[in-house]
Image (cartoon, rainbow, N blue to C red; front, side, top):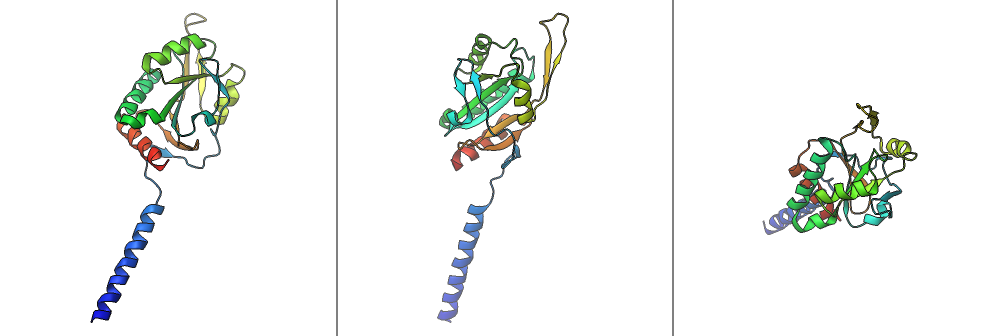
Length: 199
């Protein structure tokens, strides 16, 4: 009987070890769309609102949240930036390890001065990236984002239709998630916490 009990104990320990290994090897669960391994939107070479050249390498060690929009956007863009401010607050100290990047699709009007004021209105740590009008089409194609100029009543009162989703990168600079507009601050905070915990 003792031998049988010992065998059962060893079997139980073995099963527990297998279960633990299965847990540690399992993929994390996200609320945004998991696009790990995607072959697009991997990097960029853009100047920020301070005239400094930027790429993903500059933000290694931080989770990066990247959004395409424009300063005169009436709803989606300011809502997204406000939500990202809330997300950073929800993360507490970990919020310092999240870098928000706003790529303008309206470089004609979104000058460095305009974007400095726009970003500062939400959070001074948020950075705006400003592609040249010549580079914007190729950048949008690489990120698979849509934008289109919609004429207004005057030449300068036009609006921009654009994609309203967010790209999220892990602290190693790898594209991981595609967050659709309206996902919510709790879901975004949860996903970012998971990415930050994994390093």
